[in-house]
Length: 379
Image (cartoon, rainbow, N blue to C red; front, side, top):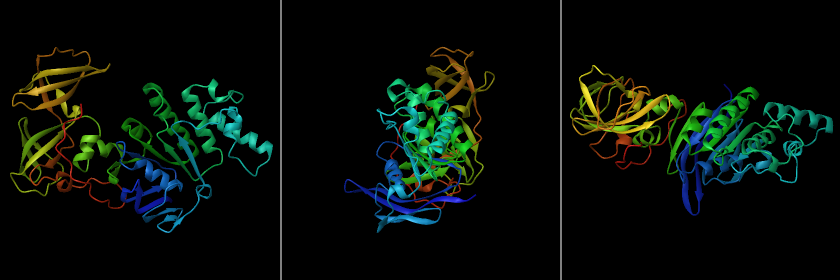
């Protein structure tokens, strides 16, 4: 695939502090990628640097192999052939839908402009709404107008800055899937910035998890969930708990619920104290199994019920049961471990993010993340 965007060790300052630290990534033509992380992690600063709104303190940004930003040079945003979609839509209230979509079209005839606008309205499911004004549209329709306007000039790259954050959850999930389909149908390269992992996973071919200005892991959604590269990613992505254990051999860990083998060897010494990441789908119901646990909490989710379980040794795990298996709080149930992706982090030595094996994707090697405190599990 052709490489469209390259970030090489970029650094950015914000409010007098280093907000982005040595970040590198590559985006190929036609890919949709996401930068995911908590507020203040630097993801929006990266997007603004790509757009040309924020200067670099170091490193470089290249589009189609041409440098558009470095420490001494910033190509103006209007010369980068980029489209942008913002969380507040940024539509012109005095223009109808057709004129909003066609606003950025220059140098073509009126007939050509009408044809482009018509195609964009069809593509984004807005056919028949061209005469309406933004205040007459729903939030989802307004966001489609913003996307159509960004796509109309056929930019090389679309940048989406928290585009669904003002929408309700159901609409957000539906619209994120629709936007991905539109981008893929057009073959448009896109970068999404979000704090919502559901959006990132729904849209992204590749997702980068950021923390304190660093890109900790650049990988597929599947690998981020099942094979997190450090303790922060493991804690930030999805749900799960960390169960204490001991490394018996390079690929075997013992916990209070038995011995577990990994598909890879860990570099730590035998006897190293570790934390094993267990997702809800790693703990499955087994009425006839010898492992018993007490139900502490339950959360009904329609087709499934998420149980918080206390083990005999005092540890806690999460488990998803089919919803017809409706057990009461305080009841004991049989379970078994079915962890196909065993992930462990060393406790001895303090910085488990540096001791963990690497699970990075196809991007160039990335800097290690900062050491993470012993956090609570994400329920």
